[in-house]
Image (cartoon, rainbow, N blue to C red):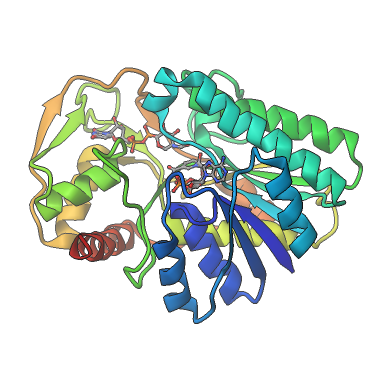
Length: 338
Ligand code: NAD
Ligand code: WQD
């Protein structure tokens, strides 16, 4: 099966590439490299022994999409391309809606033109906003988003629901990721954000390596067991396998229409627990200070992971320890290149 992966050169995309190639599928990457480098694709080749097919192009460029569909006739699309920084989206809302929402519309138009009806979409637990109950199941209210990035994911989900309702052949699985962390066990691919990291795990990695001095923990007075924020961190390889499971599910009966599926472990981990787990896995100290709460943060967020098990036959398997040790291996490799 040929699968177009938009954003396939990025953090999650490269891990999806490895899983798809190892399962015998033929992925075709379309990426404009705004947050990725072709080096990562070379390292995917090192892991899999196969060179991924790569097209440098933008999902908002209808001609580039037409050329990709003409050349490869994919039977499904993994749609990962998007801008993803919450803070940046507040400063640049139009850029975020243009890239994420308009880009998705161009992609859907091209899919319709080429009779392609299957899409797996990178959605996010952010569509739930501040959840009223925990764990969060897929039927919890969505749309209470607090920033343009989150709203772009919510709006895209709504567009995909309408598209699926209008096309009886359409199959859409919106994967609502919780907090992806970690790296491939080879240490050759992982997340390497430009500048100061926004997310917890890359920040901890850089403090452990000594390239940043200390972590600021944003609040220790939340209503959580130790006062720090609780999230559902899942290993990026588990996440990538969830995409493979979604593609395989589309081959089976009753996959038509729009389906939202949480990808998480179902376990909540606090910031302090993550710091301790990373120190144990890396053997390095992670000095921290308690800082004020970060605006827009919620106290706790973790998944009800049962629907993923029932609908996709998928569940997260990696431990917190392997999330940390794989992230640490990757961090050391990433820093050895610079
Ligand atoms: P990433 O930035 O590493 O990957 C996104 C890729 O998309 C990059 O390679 C970038 O160059 C490419 N891209 C962006 N705009 C494009 C465009 N207009 N045309 C073509 N390519 C474009 O991010 P990631 O962490 O791998 O995230 C992948 C997807 O998962 C994103 O849609 C993101 O919003 C979503 N997501 C990520 C997280 C997370 O915590 N990493 C959580 C939930 C959802
Ligand atoms: C996790 C916890 C922070 C950094 C974000 C997006 C979400 C999704 C995943 C894409 C929180 C605390 C963090 C730091 C800290 N992305 N923290 N010090 O906010 O759950 O989710 O990434 O869809 O949309 O909002 O992840 O890693 O930023 O924070 O104390 O330097 O770590 O307060 O409790 P978050 P995160």
